[in-house]
Length: 466
Image (tube, rainbow, N blue to C red; front, side):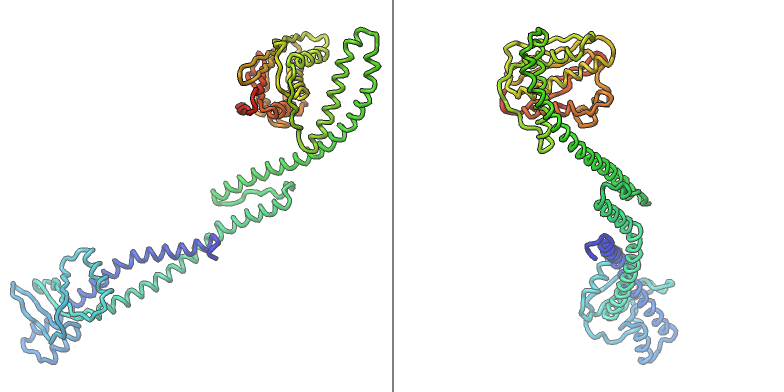
C-alpha cells in the first residue's frame, strides 16, 4: 500500500489535512477560551443585577447566584467606585489575572495553550467590560479547571471532526487518483509489457488515449519509441537475412574467382603486348576480389579484421586505383590528376587502404559521369610530423542534402540512386581501424573533397565532426 502511488497520495493527503487542521485548531481554541470567559463575565453581571434590585438578599440566594455564574465573587466598578457585588470564600490564593478588555491575538493564543498544558487546579481573576454599559469594569474570580476541561472537550471534537474530514477527503482524492492517474499509468505499463513480449508486432504499439496532458505526452513519446524500435528490429532481421545471403554469395563467388586465378599463368604467357600490359592488373583485381569475399565472410562471422600494418607506397596504390578507374571510364571525358610524392611511405594495411581510396574515387567517377559533363578527379598527399593526409577531390555536382545528413550511417547515406550507403561507412570503419579519420572537407555545386588522415604515432586521431 505504501509503495503504490495512490497509497502514498492517500497518506500524504491525511497528513496535509491534519496539518491544516492544526493551523485552524490553535486560533479556534483561543477563540473558544475567549468566548468562555466573556460568557462567565456576562453571567456574573446578570447575577449582580439581583443585588441592585434588592440591596438585602439572603446568603443562600447569593450563593445560588454565584454557583449559577460559576464564580467566587463579582466586583463592579461604577463612577470610579469599586464595589464587591457578590462574594463567597475563595479556597486558595489567586494565581493569575487575565484582562479580556483588549487582548491581542498572540496573547489569547498563548493563554489558551498555557491553560491546556497546566494541569493544576488554579484560581484565576478575569477582568472585562460590562455589557450594555453596565459600568466601567467587571471582575470575577473563578476556578480554571472547568475552563480547561471545556477546552479539552472542544479540542477532542475538533480532532474527531478533522479526522473525519481527512478520511473523506483522502478517500475522494484516492478514488480520483485511481481513476485519473493510476489506471491510465497501469494501462501504459500493460502496453509496455505486451509490447515487450512481441516487439516486432506493430499491433502492440500503444495508441495514445489519456486525457491528462502529461500522461498523453508520455504515451506519445512511448509510441514514437516503440515505432522506431519495431522498425529497427525489422531492419535488423532483414539485415541478418541479407547477411546470410551475402555470405553464401561470397562463398560461391570466392570459389569462382579462385578458379579464375588458375588461368592467370596462361594469360601472362601470352605474346600480345596489350594482354601482357593488362594481365598483371587483371591478376591483382582477381586477387583483391578473392580477398574481399574472404573478408566479407569473416565480417559476417565477427567483424572487419584488424589491419595488418606494414610500410606501403602510397603513390603505387593511388596509381593502381587510377588505372582501374580509367579503364572503367572508357572514352568518357574524365581526367585524373595526382600529386603524390613518389617516396611517401605510409604505415597502413595496403589492401584496406586500396579499398578506401578505390571507393572514394569510384564514387567521384560515378557522380561526374551521372551528370553527362566532363570532369576531373584529383588526389593530393601531404604530411607533417603527426599525420599523413590524402585529399580526394572532384568537380562533380556535390553531395545531396540527405547524403550529407547521413553520410556515415549505413543504409541512409547513399549518394547514387539504388546505392546501399555502405561504401562510405565501410571506408570510415577501415580508416578508424588505423587510428585515423575520414571526413568530408567540402561539398557544393563545384565539387566534393574528402580527406583521409592517418596518424604517424600509435595514438588515434580525434573523430571528425559530423
